[in-house]
Image (cartoon, rainbow, N blue to C red; front, side, top):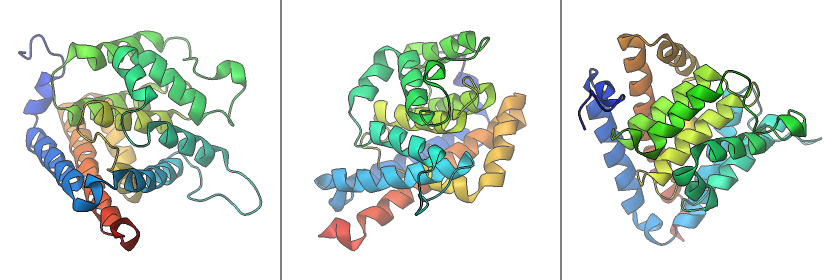
Length: 248
């Protein structure tokens, strides 16, 4: 598909982006081929899911762990999102493939259940619908760019749009994770890019602003940081696979 027909194709021509996408794909492939993930991937996927949730919570202003004297709504929502995606081929993956808007609404219902009233769950704010529809079109065949690029675009667009006004960051990172799973880039959800983004939270937020600006430099910085996160997330997956509990 040529760039004139594929709205995201020009992104792959930005400096370093195609190479970064390839490196992320290769790194995730190595993680999936690790001997501990050939059969024991469900256990490692569960650990990856928990780490992803904790990091995503922190990026949205929540806690890394539950306090001893009660709950923490942002972390609770992030864990519900992670559990809905855990292990790869699940119900939500199927929903994403045929109806991305339903999947996004479901992610918000999970993420924001303790933050807003029930009648606000899964309901985009006025004015957000059209851009969400464009994103859904891309997700259902409107582009042929690598999954890492599509995941970065969806992630950045949801951060920029803030379609729900609550838990938007957790939803955005959940959608990014969902795309990498549904596309087969990370089919078991073993990668943990969220940890890298949490550790570089200032860079993450600055790059997100760059994406929102729409400038070539801003888009490049966001795409590179996104792919860097996937690559680092693959290393995190290997560290999980190499832990004694995974080996034995």
